[in-house]
Image (tube, rainbow, N blue to C red):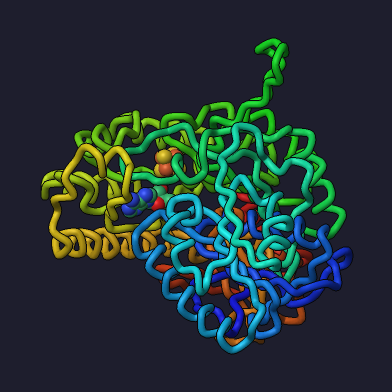
Length: 483
Ligand code: 5AD
Ligand code: SF4
């Protein structure tokens, strides 16, 4: 996804052109923070607004409506949004009549507080209320501030074709479910995104088919906990229920040349069937994002994760048994309530034991109203959290580099995603395992599959050069296809 000029670097801005079907009416600028699900939600919002006659722009200065799709997962995510609201306030002073809307998880969590910023915020809309946005914007035009933060048990936006506004048209997100029924003690998501519900599988398959026809080369199926996907309309017998493994298979069958990814898997729910399905279909990528959060049984219990350290290690062993080349990545939280040095050491030792290929690593941030905020003291001093996080990051850098070094000399099929940021004569693509690869372009284009031999690496990137498929030795080809 492209990051545009007048947004801060951590934001995603959709747009850059007015897609076919989008209205020529007032122009909407959408800035997105947070997870992939939020990016996809903004594409749904773009579609709803285009149907209502709005045009889209990637330039805030041209916009009549400025929307910010927000994240509430950690305090610093919210701090950033307050900062952006100050910028929007200045914009509104400069250009009278501009409307500002706050969408997403922070809108859900902080509705009243946001409305108190009356000089900036005109509409506040939660993740399940996006269909109401055109109506709320119309009311706001008449001077009435609009709020809808109702959570739903049914809304999946199944009938809406998200407007794809990524610049390169290679890889698309497809939401397969919404909400979350787990109550991980630290996590605000169940409160901001509501109860879990799965989307009709036929609408998912149709969307993937459309993407394939549009020339997309990769889809990522999204859910907070994809392994608990289940489609069973009332009155259908159990044996006809569609599980995540079934859905994955159906999606993989749409177009054998289209890569299929998914996120996120929960260690307590990831099934053997899913891993077998991955093994059966060459176009399902050999990557599982399996957040562990901590290596200490005591922490895992307090976090309400419903698995033990050994249980997690068993899952990893089962994955590697079936898919020896599977890339395994994770999320980690440093300094959760009552975490001791011993607990922290357990996290470090688990990381070594698994040898994660990469990880997202965070300092624990207490979120109001979560189980942890209500029942446990946030008692690890910030300086200790910071130091533990640094140790986790330093170890992960070592592990990532080790994992990348193991790939030097090997050859991978790479899907080209974009020109390299540092030097546009180089291209950036990804292996099936989701590792970033940079190589000289040699006339190849974004969206093509090429074979790349890895010659060197850093902890974050593989570097190599394209090998001609025709001249590649049979052995190389075998390695390329991951056999
Ligand atoms: N503090 C820090 N990290 C958190 N995450 C979720 N909630 C919190 C929190 N309160 C992390 C978890 C999760 C990822 C998406 O964000 O690691 O897997
Ligand atoms: Fe949050 Fe846990 Fe649900 Fe993930 S599985 S969204 S961490 S409650």
